[in-house]
Length: 405
Image (cartoon, rainbow, N blue to C red):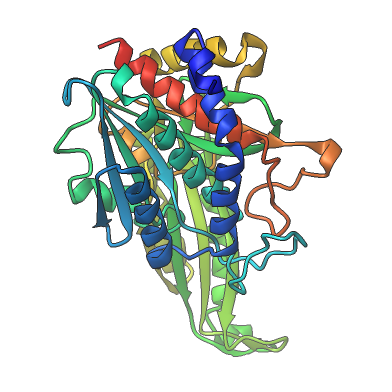
């Protein structure tokens, strides 16, 4: 007798199915990991996802935001409540250093942020849900989203192209790998969870010349030093003390400078992050005005370009509390932990600005196996035991949310 037939509860059925397909989900993850593609270039990844849905008999649309794929699983009534589950599919421009059988075959490109895990998990959850579709009412929208890693973010493009319409979900759930959390656990936080993220591109212009004759020049290096120092006051003296806020410049370069040459200009690249959308845009104007005024006051000029990026990711309190309770019922209360806010950013935030959303973290670390490397590093990997949890839990959360309809 098939093990699924002996299960007495829906939870047991989901857990058994997750166990049954675990090896297949690992294979999917490894295929994706071996064949990573950068943001906006996920052609083969999109086709692979579409083929997987086709094999399951799940209707889908391929080509939203170019490489995105959206599938629909309709329950026994063919309509009813609609919820969305989301995974991102793009990789990073990193050369993998892991020596594993599924090492990236695409030089200089790596799934170093776990999007291979997210995609394989959602495909696994889809398989479970499709198997159980006669046991629930409503509709589940499966969103496989490209270009999470690069502005303007695939989520924003998919939303503009109607991914949250026809049918319109009532809420959306997503997950993300979290190496600091051991495999077998998940973590979450209600309310403000992840920061907005804006990119800063600054050009400070002066008048170059001989380094021994600064009186004949307008030194953009000195002007830049004053600007960098002064801009930190935006955070320390203007932001509300209760508002998390970060300003970092990670790149500085001069054009034509040398040990004895004052350059004509200096370029800066940085990031500004906060948890307050109103303060965010107020800070933009303050930074721009301060930098331009300092440069002008020292005889130079400043072009201050702000590329507005992802908004604050807000986990809807009521939905997140439901997800927490349901996860505790599925995993055990001891395996669901509270997380602090993060000043990292994620374009899932665009969905959270449109409807109730919950974004939780999937434990993937295992120090005993040496799986400890952070995301966005060339030795990032996961304990693949997480894939049984990730597929079953996401399917369980979807079923429980539809059950409430």
